[in-house]
Length: 79
Image 1 (cartoon, one colour):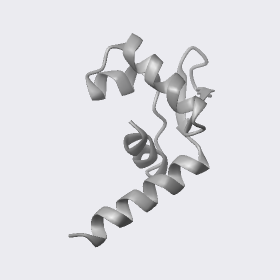
Image 2 (cartoon, rainbow, N blue to C red):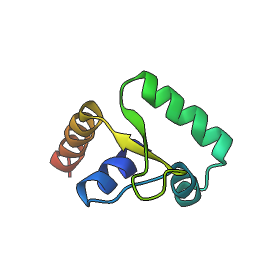
Image 3 (spheres, rainbow, N blue to C red):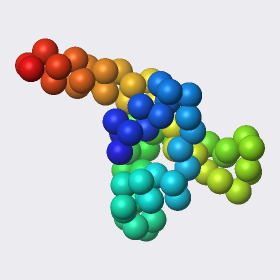
């Protein structure tokens, strides 16, 4: 989940809960619990979508971006 959110962030896309659930094939109730957990870890935050205020976007935090970058560097250095 975090890697997908970080990728979207780096490509300039916003990701809402419904779209994320559909992309990952995760039921919305399960995804909501996962996002709550990630928010407690300060890896994501929720934000109201500026174009459609009914949508809630999930945004990676600076900590998530840092951890994702470190993880990918680690994986790529072992290839």
